[in-house]
Image (cartoon, rainbow, N blue to C red; front, side, top):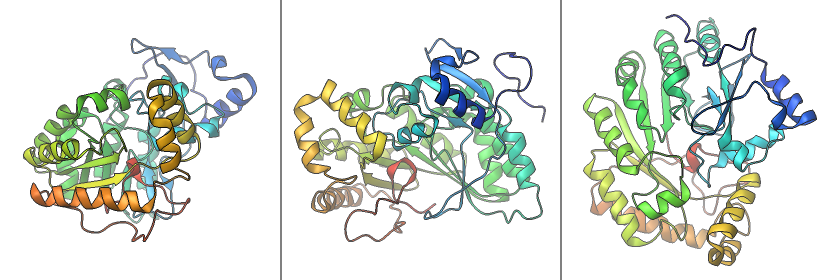
Length: 343
């Protein structure tokens, strides 16, 4: 397949991630004069990457793929916000308004999967930033990556909030045949007030659930992550019940859920968001999140309620969790979209 054209003809080879990081460190984000602004008000900086497969530890998979860095979905709770500090960018607006596009990503991935040393281990796509955020409609880096995964007969798990994933149902079905493919649509809630407050740049939750139905009809193993469950926003019994019922009604093959955790820059951003938009909730959050995780008693209560509602609506659960914790996970644990689940 011919490489997709870049959005802007900048001339020459786009800078590397390292070059960009040094430039931001020395001159600030505004010095990125090649980052082009689009109608969504975000700026897109094309970069080149030296590797596509990213080795991780402590997860139920060893490799991750993220063709973009930063995400215009702008979810206030997103754990990936804290990774912006590696670029000396803030976890706030920079995360959703300055997007790095790894224009050579799919070509590098194909080369890596062609190496004799590659053992066709399972990879996770979209664990840090959404592979189906709107700009994917132009660059098609995720679609081209799926082509590479099919050629390399490599199994994949995909996490996304983007209904655009239905565009690639043909490739996902083919990948399911030659290796394996599991799709996790992130739908934390169907409550419209909570959705508007927490996920300002995402598609409507019901659009995401309709995407689950479409993928299931295409023979793809697709389910829902009701994650994160956000205290005070989505934890009311009526809201949990409505979401889980909607998941069941749309034919999800499985469902996972986990309570919000807050670390580093993500916690700073989220608490700032509360102070600005929901100041009456700040004190409760400070008590509930003395550390990165809500208190074990609170988490246990919410999980018991979710389990009961899943049983009521006959939603198939992912019965194996990544970790078996008596209390909250350790500070070193991270999970895609803040959920504990088995790929």
